[in-house]
Image (cartoon, rainbow, N blue to C red):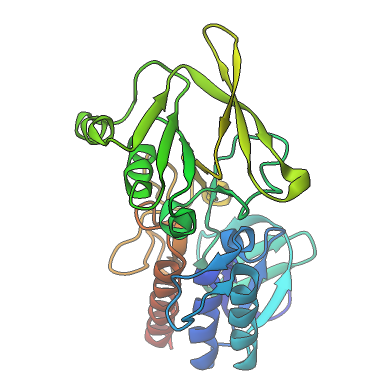
Length: 309
């Protein structure tokens, strides 16, 4: 198995890389395992304008690269690999990747959450170019433009209401004839003059990836089978997120939706295992809050290891 590391960090988004920075500066020589989706959701983002310190904004992949290089400057080691299984029975914990089996006295989980997508052609190509999964991240780019939101739950209504601050019109696309959202959120959305509803409808097609910009979504009425074109410049997919926690089933405590449960900062139910970022945060889901919790996880891990010394 080789040497036992002080800290292994699974995940390389803002949470994992900030944890690596702090752990490296504490001389813990952290090893970061970045998966195939290295960098997390920021890699799907174009311009990030709400990261403090970048007055004119920074491209999502550029921000991740800055974070990577900053962590590496202080001695963090970053490797690419797919984690197949972990054993958190007792320290040192074992982490098995496709290439190696690692041992670590402390483990930081920063595997993030994946936004559920529609699975349509052109959706991923236009991510950051009209298609988005985060209203608070991207709403500002759609000032006085027509946009649509897909979904019928509380988060979809929150996004739609938030987006009315910027958009000329927001069309909520929902596959049913009534919303799943709470009564108070339904009332707020239906009372907003900027919000319209496309009931009993699903997105059938997203155009036009060949032009590199969203122009039209084709809707299909699930009751009549009829299709219609809706001209929009933004499409916000708000049908939920899936936390990347399947690795830890049966080992770490999770809530009903599969997010890791943390207490007293970043501590999980297993001493020596810490969690940060979207894998344990289903409320804020921002790069800056993920980074903040990555700092917390590294400091909690450092204090844990100090007590063991």
